[in-house]
Structures are given as C-alpha cells and as structure tokens.
Length: 184
Image 1 (tube, rainbow, N blue to C red):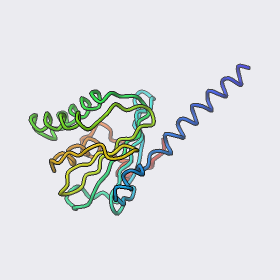
Image 2: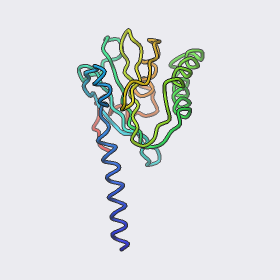
Image 3: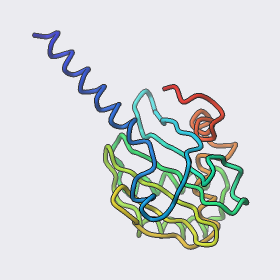
Image 4: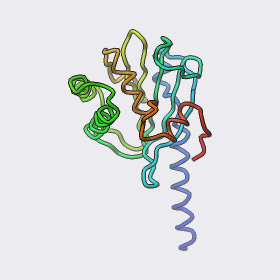
C-alpha cells in the first residue's frame, strides 16, 4: 500500500512538472494578437530546488540581437508558484535598482503602471511581455491582453532583468539566449 501511495505521489509530481514544462511556449493569446514570433531559447528558474517559473524568449526570426534591431521581443513566464501582484512588482523594481537600469522616478512610475496591469499569479498562470518598437510593451496572459506600458524605455529595462550580462540568473540568461542547453 505504501509503495502504491508513493508511486502515485511521484506520478502526480511528475505530471505536474511535465504540464508546466509543456506550457513554456508562447501563449495563443500573443499569436492571436498578430505576433508571429520564433523561440530563441527557454529555461527554468529554481530557488533552493523549488521551481519558480519556466521562461522563454521570442523574436521575429528566433535570434536576439539586442533591442536596437527594431523587431519585437517577447518574454513568456509560466509560473510554478503563487505570487501576489505586489510581490512581483517589488521583485521587479528591486532588480531595476540593483542593475541600475533606470533612475528612481522611472522605477516608481513603471511600478505604478505594473500595479494597474498585473494580477496575482498561481501555478500554471502565464505572464508574457511583448516589447514592440515604437508601441511600448504589451502584457498578455493566456486569455488575452492585460495592458500596455507606452514608455519606450520600459520594455528594454524590463527584459534586461533576465538578459543583462549582470543579471543574478546567469544560467537562465544563457538558456534564454540559446547559449547553453536547456537541460533541467
């Protein structure tokens, strides 16, 4: 009986991990909005062995050449844990400050915008940022458009949390940029 119960738990955990892994792609809501993007890379963020989210980076041609190329860049996050909107905003603003990606007034204004757009997330939820040159940054979840930050400086600063060479998550950065394998 104990063996069966243990096997059942292992099966449920494995199914949950596979379900999350399968969701790491670009949500249909982004494609439905007319963004035809190709994956650059993907990876998984963990902390103390716990899954935080699956992340994937997307561009029009499947290559990331920076933000100056005039092409859309998207970052899709599929959460494996529950976070409040406020926790997400605090983490984001903290990374902007740590990486010196924007002055304090811009971080404050952007945090207010995110408070208007973002929502709490739970396991299996998606949050995707699409940085569109000349149009700002669009945020989607799996159901559709959540909102937009029009400031053209916002999108690159937001994505640099993951893509900057000084990021605290170097392994994930390398995976997103396609520089190393996506082994878990």
